[in-house]
Image (cartoon, rainbow, N blue to C red; front, side, top):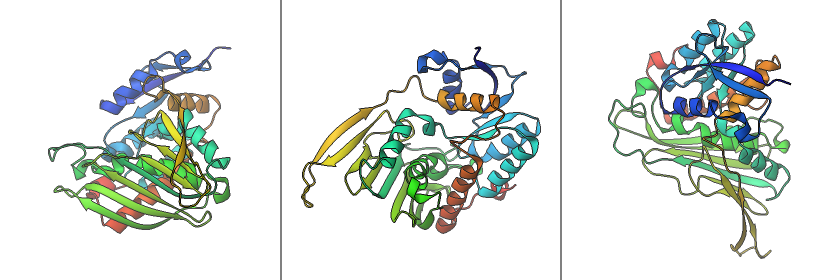
Amino acid sequence: MSPTALRWGILGLGGISSHFVSDLLTPPSDRGVSDVKHILHARGAGVVYIGTPHSHHYANAKDALESGKHVLLEKPATVNAEQAKALVALAKEKGLFFMEAQWTRFFPIAKDIQRAVREGEIGQILQVHADFGLQFGDLPPTHRMMDPNLAGGSFLDLGPYPLMWILMTLYHHPDNHLTRPVVAGAVIRRTSTNVDESTTALLNFPALGASAIASTNMAVASLTPLLIKGTKGEIVIPELPLSRPESYELRLPVSSHKSSNERNVEKRAFPIPHHGMHWQADEVARCIAAGKTESDVVPWSETVLTADIFDEIRRRGELVYPEGVEAV
């Protein structure tokens, strides 16, 4: 049986688009895939990958959908929830595939951590702390991370990853029954250009009796990007980047004595061929071939949920972007 061939157009020439294109052109056999293949073909493209600045996501995706193209849209899909809802409604109206590019969700390591949590390897999950900090150094005010007109700041750029891990482990926990988390608080530290340098948010999951902390920072780097704490032990991603981890640690107590902090540590490795953005492209190809308009892994409802949570965190921290950036 011949593999499904998907023709791609690329919008945006930044670093993340370069990674995506490079992965798109690698042999599928490098990752053990034989049912799909990807072709760069701007004029005959059936799907468009959009890797432009956050401020342009909504308008670019809207144009692509209105032109009859399927869309893979970089995260965050939009600056706010109203924009996300509008894109979902347009994709539904046109009968086109639309997905937020949450590439980390398709990693084997992500699937294995979800399995370990679901099977109770560390007991009942009580807390998740997902932290993504990178030291960007001194940036000019015109840099995309510093410019509010480009929807800059740490949270929109880095925040999708902490929230991704929190949703994968708590929101999708079988005992949560897809109950929405409650944003209990947020603290935002601003730069001189009025974007956030760092953001810390507290989320509660009442159905689980669990809480989560999502934090981002562009002044200091993370020390422990992911810590999942359960009644029987911990799961830890000990090294950056949180967006592309290749191993995690299962830490279980040596002794049943409550005061003991000594742990047996089992390291589980999941090497990523190339950069790792190809797996989400494979998902797009399979969904389109099957006539689906959304992915079961990153459904429209979760893109809207993510944007809703971001909106509430920004509201609590009084972080607003220029009117043109927020407009629908």
